[in-house]
Image (cartoon, rainbow, N blue to C red):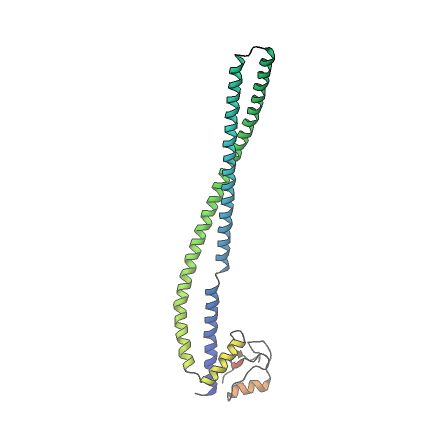
Length: 241
């Protein structure tokens, strides 16, 4: 096989290696939209947990206030019973004072319980709202993950064919040329071969090659590398051989 043909095959091999590298990168990193959906679900879960905690704490406080109110009622009943058995005006007025104090405490507790009930209603509405938002986000995430899994499965099938094509192509390239290609591939971030068009620009580093280099490329007698980036060069179809 002529050297020029090897170079053309290297261009095709580079295209396959680029697709494989892109596939591996896509496989290693989930799409930004999917990552964002997961973040939104996590945020909604945290918000729901926070609203639920606040609601539970308010309910515990309300129950404690109810017990205090019940204790005040029992205290007032006790004082009222004692009124029936007092023997002096001093004791009578003392008990009346205690009863008034208990009434004042009960009135304050009733106001606090009423405020807590209003707060509980608002918190219940918040919990319901956040829960509904979470369900929507969870459904969106489930749908997105299903679509991504299907996409990756299809891509896996496609890439198995690309990998097989790559091995067939590599077997048809001179081993020494292939070793050189592999070495540059590693050194140059996965791009070992660059195209040169009519504008004489290396597609790997965008530098301008000389007319002499272009002429050598057109002759196809040896592998030509870019003087700037060191990548193997081959001509676009528009240049011809």
